[in-house]
Length: 175
Length: 179
Image 1: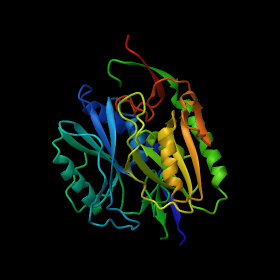
Image 2 (image 1 turned 30 degrees about the vertical axis):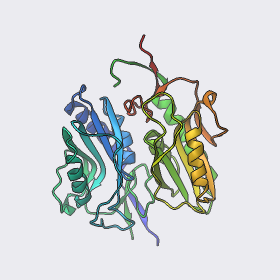
Image 3 (image 1 turned 180 degrees about the horizontal axis):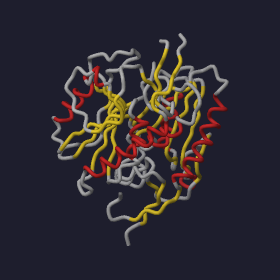
């Protein structure tokens, strides 16, 4: 199967946006209270790594792996937790970092689960938002880019587990 | 970013970027003619920044995966017991594996992880660490790729923590002890 990848968001455009998001987040939280930044593996790792370096607060980081994305383009509807957080989040501010929000199913389930643990707050920061695909109710607090309903890869996002290491966001053409 | 502590820069952001670009090129050269799939495995939580930067400098169709082990606690010294909290998801039999570490000191954790992965019969295992604290080595582990050899300082930043904080510093720092 052959396909090509066209650039949708270039490296320097990503960089500039992430600096802005980092500043915004730094301003919105309290230095003394700190913040736990939660990344959803594997897709959010590159975005999260760049974002946290732009957050000038005493943060902790943690990761969760959920299984709703398989090797298919469509998200399946069942969400299983493969790896839970290591940190306790009760009375803490939590910022969930996502690479992309489309239907919002996975994310809404993750939020429900974390809310039961009594955090002080939960906010969402996503690099990409495919709003026209939204089916579940998810409020995005920080957003990098609105994108059309195209199949995107790179900067952490995969196609059949590949291309996560592209330094830019691309669109897969010809699949 | 670190409450009431002073941090000196040991390795700056620019130095990190330059060295990681070199490592990415070397790794690309090593694997570009392999007909095996290359899977890059990061050890959480410390290696995430290094891994994110390194993979973007590897110009090959790689897959990435993660493992979480429990040997590093909130203490300065690594404890000796290694528990796998999260295993990798990929099947690695017959594949080329690149393990990405933030730092190797005693090498005990890593040697146990290597044993586990070797038991799954990959085609090869290559080890890449950003920092190498050779003076602390207790088991004979040699990294194939080393970012920087460092002295026995307590380092933090760029993924490395002090009590789970400071991982988001964009450089490698040394913490000044309180007097």
